Length: 360
Picture (cartoon, rainbow, N blue to C red):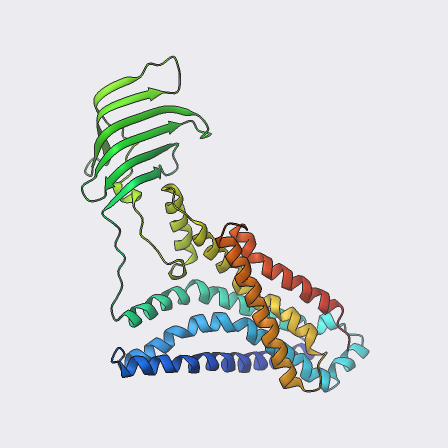
């Protein structure tokens, strides 16, 4: 790292940290009124109040990091431009893209930190925050029964359809099991039974008064008083899933929940949108840095006021665009993954364009 790179990096990190503390401070102060209300109502002890504020920090950091990067990059380049340092460097033959290289690299590292916090600290802090507000630890309990249950066997080519299933007793009514071929496009066998019970010790479904129909016309239907097959061993627990808040799950848990919801025919769109945002939003800091660095040297006079104004407009402009695409994804108009990354792609394209056009 050259001396000029250390100088620019040091100023950028300093500006970023000042901006981050300022933005987080503003948000925390706005929450103090709510904390005071909880204290006066007796819902919080002083210790709970401090703990509550601490649980707000991960989400606050995630939300304001792009704004802090934007303002920090604008302040760094604006200060250098006002001191004629940018012109001096360009006169020496150093391209502007080379000047801003290390702030961009640091922004990428910040995005990595945001990604880590978003996937580890934030889900935990959100759960604790909600428990504090409700006054008790909230436990999720799955329903005992489910009607119109659907389940695809894990890594298998059969599906269950049941009018009602009880996860505690293992009893099910109006059961239909459909066997398909390996490509999952042709029915090989259909098993129907008015009732059945899951044997928890043998881990197999025991069906009563069974009718078996074959996809091959040469095979005649069969009727059996009792029927069981070791491959049909999916527990009743698999037919019933908990209602979850996507934001309280890590990426690993989100993927697991999506697989479980798909296996029972549940709606996974909200989970997919959250998963897409978990991957895309942390990189907003990296994307936004291009805009801040490109625009920083254009507003030398009135640096603080103009930089702050542009920062607010661009930063919240990104949030509006991101929220709009998220709404389109939730309502089924956009692929959830595409909806999460389109705002980044759009703002990155604009940032690179402005960076190439930057003149001082």
